[in-house]
Image 1 (tube, one colour):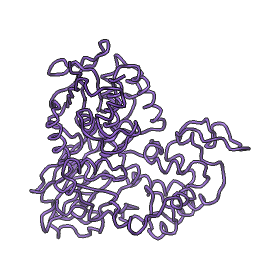
Image 2 (cartoon, helix red, strand yellow):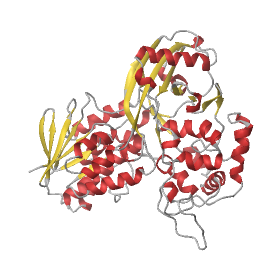
Image 3 (tube, helix red, strand yellow):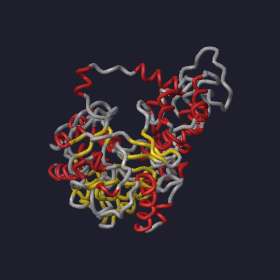
Image 4 (tube, one colour):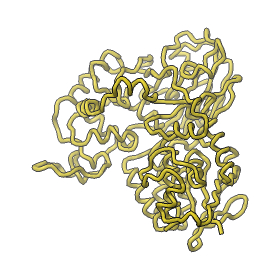
Length: 520
């Protein structure tokens, strides 16, 4: 008799999990154990090749798959209404595209140099930033983003005073105790102290102005949040690791750069771009992935909501709007609040942890003009807006500059982002009101004086989980509680990583875990 694994959620996390469960290869090495296929994972779990195959079912409440990956036509050209590129540091999304036969259509942005708004004007971001943090204050001074007073305050970070930054203040495991180190209970050097927010750590050393004008719009903007509420270890893990034991953020960044091996000329020539997009839109990845799953025999259901999840001995009953489904294993590739609702009966501790993860909502406004209708369109890929500027726009992408194929000749296509944690103004407006508000700000910033040729609003409610200090501990407790149940795992951005590669990797990891537990 075939065993059944149900994947709840048809975003990239759930689809990636289903592919591995159905026999597809991994797209990147997993910390799970290095198996590179379902067969390898099953062998590692002690499941013999003669055992019955799994039946894999994906249940999605929306009428389509892909989650926030969505490509649509806009003035006759494909445009992304969700993410328009992905990071290549994690190679999984690029590898998946190659495995699906569309790797040749991956393209690097034509430009990737953004600006930032400071005192109502656009300023190009200085070169060499590390997630908004400047290793070189002289380069920052020439950008005029930060005032002379703000620069002087940031320069004090170079004076090695105070206690070193401790691992515990970053939410990391305590570093080995150094001999004769003196710490103050509850302070930044206390190995047993609580995790601090990213802003608390960075502002203490670099000052408020630099962090609010430069770091928060970049690092906070990526997560649709603010550094006052984010864990540095989750949103910038490499930076957090580099800070441990240092008294100076700037010094730690410089040390990080010195310790990073410089690529040879040959390696530089063949190195992949930092970001990649897909000609025709990232939605093509979803289309090809769905076709791949159909070819592997995966049962795909859209427009079906899982309303309840109940354990019955060593199996699960999933109540859906289309009836009851019995499963031997489950992957919950759903937002934290959805997983919490399903787990409240059988795993109340996990439900409480996942249900306490806050989310922010965003709305994107895509606009098109004739080229001559914008008087001051700057060079580069777009701009970021610090929270302190008070504008409804949080960032803007010049899509036609970044991806020339999205615009017809003689036209400019721009996408403005609105909404972040603590700012729900855009969701209190109608589409028309939001578009008018965005146009009013774009007139001042880039001189968009004429009415647009077309506009399109895409809303993403509760789209971005917020990684508050203590988030990783929250996820560890949730997963520990689930480990007491048979063959059920979590996937998706709620675990602690946004972006297509991170979500894809989390889905594959969850699939391997379920395979292991079914073979135990």
